[in-house]
Image (cartoon, rainbow, N blue to C red; front, side, top):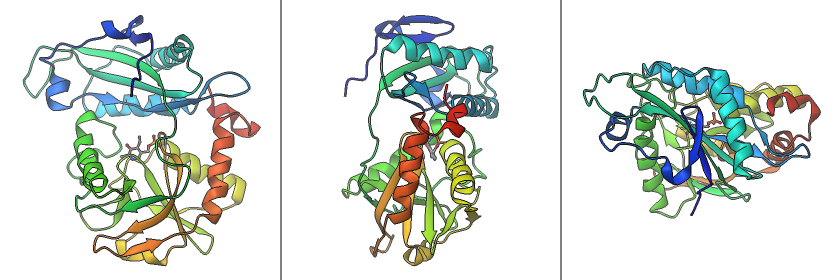
Length: 299
Ligand code: PMP
């Protein structure tokens, strides 16, 4: 997949994609100490619009704080960099990837503050299928919140997500669903999960999950448009056969219907998508400027 676009924003300037390189003796490359965001923008009647840009940048700065990266950029500057990068890309719909990292130098774990920020943009279609997908619970557990701040999106943490994805992809499932170290349902490697039973909606409580943007969007729109309060609680793997429906949410995965979940022991739980489909449709309308009351989420 060639995702190259002509320009990249780096430290307040646009430079050519091919000129944007990093020194290989680099704290963040070796130890994963950078922080990043994944943001989508959509084609709308008003031109390309970025969904929930502010909240993504707030998470980026939160993540940086947890890693003690002292940033000499303001939130507004990085937001503007994202808006300018989309304009300069000439791409109608795709993905924005801001990253903040140590550029080089000191390789002690306790790093120096030699920070740079880069924003790239590329065209990106669906991450997972529009049809209900097959999900499998891998053996690998989601890392525990006692080992890292799970609310932060830190490069190094993604080794856990990568290993889980590789485990289930080698068995031809579309996506994984990780349990936490106490065997409660946590999240997908790239998305949060919701379950439906008799019109009630459930999602894992804040513990071993990255809980920010799309999860919050879904909780808000369920309350405001369907008068449904999502119940945040511990969900055991053994609860899964009791559910009628399940769906993944995430910036990349958007709302993804789940057709089946194969439990760790091999039992396959088949799921419907009746109400999930309505939520997916509403989400797709909101991100494309079709629901006026949520247009404030689009930049
Ligand atoms: N969990 C994980 C582990 C993720 O990587 C993502 C994608 N950023 C999500 C959940 C969903 O995140 P978002 O807040 O972007 O919707």
